Length: 296
Image (cartoon, rainbow, N blue to C red; front, side, top):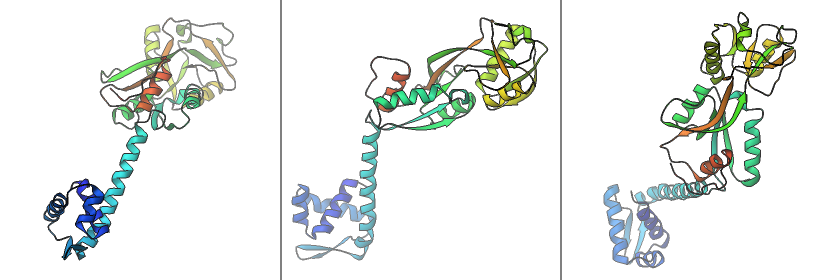
């Protein structure tokens, strides 16, 4: 159903006269009459009763008018929403991020970005690295801050920050006073780790493999604060990112060269992004000039 014709129908219904409606719409009267006739054929019913030069809505036309008004209202709302979405100074950014980034990196990015673009809104999602990749792939998030970099070739990636990893140990632990430690020094210790599917768990497993140790995973968690709390309770050691946190915990820099993680932004490459998303992407990556149009 052509919405232009629906608008013309409403104009005829308001004026009760084809010629007057045509003048308001700036179309020819015969062209308007033909359009209304086509609409009636499409709907399979008569919308107007002719009364000399005037027309009056039929019983069926009265029914259709209410729906026609809603159609036009919805179209106008859709156009306003699109105009809002394509304005780089407005719109919504659906941003996913890891649990470990919720305390500092993400709030700082959003605060600084909204100083420049106060009318942009954020919808935030928080999950594991695997959960964030799934949300971006499904279109539930425009961008996600994750680590490590996704392996799927469908994703693009921009690094944001490199974090040196720390070995969290109980305050009275034999390694607590060291200025640094090799991961191999923790061989034989019970480890507390994030659950599989979390990026930090994948990094922990890979660092242990490179160090030639096979740690016993005593506990698994979903929050870095839980992991630190269990370390503070003396239940094991853990590989954690900065900033250090947790009572009764000491954080020892790990001297292994690979003991770091790169945190970055990821998105599906071949998916249209709004100007607001493009601008935030450029801002977060430190680009001087943020683009103002959508693209891939």
